[in-house]
Image (cartoon, rainbow, N blue to C red; front, side, top):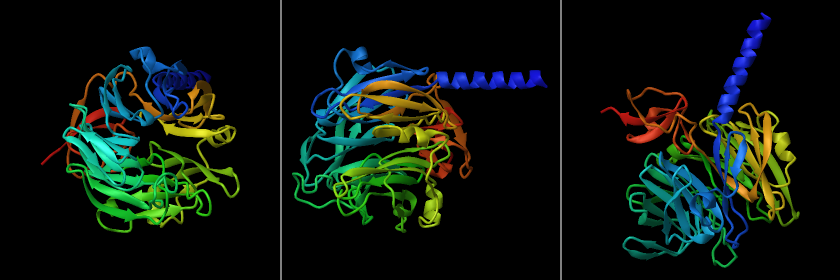
Length: 430
């Protein structure tokens, strides 16, 4: 019996160490705004390999204030470098491929594997057919074959989070420059845009101002943050149902806690660190949430939120000076968060097991806050072509951005997904 237990412990440790060694995480360090010192950190096998990975690989700097990163396909990653006004494309090994210019003040991105869609605060955009001008903000569509902007669509003022669902883009508008250089109020809308034609279909008014920051996606559900107006209107969060929005139904619920930094778990929930600031009090109020979006929508927000995070994660984050990001590796379930400290010096990366056991902390660069997991070794060597019968319900299906899909009716034919830890090319049968 003792030998049997010893064997099980050794087997568990072997599996644990093998999975942990497969962790490959890219972290964007924003640096200091207008200081042109954004950097990429690369974390692998339980250690930070480099805190200037892009420069190591390419011999020049990344740029000023990188603020989003996504995997486009097996061989391409996109990084939006906000104040440098470029979308930088790299290979998974860090080498630069191209940079798309002419999308000023770019914010967040999503992709369908053929195009990259970027939200922008700007009022003009350089496209393949010349300059286009807007009163408000816009979304740009970049062809990854030419790395050119091939279409644009005006949405709301200062658009932020962007997600793709059933051929439609969902863009959260902030109006974040309200009263600061722009003569308009805060926005309260989510714009819905046809991705193929890049035309605005409609705006959904949530009644909540300043929909700010990156939003996580779990299948049909989005987690959207609002910091309020920083004075009388308090910070809060929104669960948004894309399916219901497309059908013209009531499609969102509001909860009384911000979701400033949020991520999607392997079981389709959201983890969120809320950081609410008010000039009335002169300080921050933090919240820590596990959100079940399906339950939230079914109960109209009456249940579905737990004020906790897995394992020791909440206690560990509460010990940080200034939480600045949270992430779950969509391939392995390992969890990460960053501490920006006092914003001017090096930050820290925290790593937890999928159960929430703290595995270690690591020094990064200034203001680390955006993550991308690379597939574990053995998952980059090819694509399995898998054809499923329509109507079946696969378990644990995610796209390359880590978003979960509950059934195959939500999947797009010809697109790469992750199922049970392996990549597949989904082909729907006629």
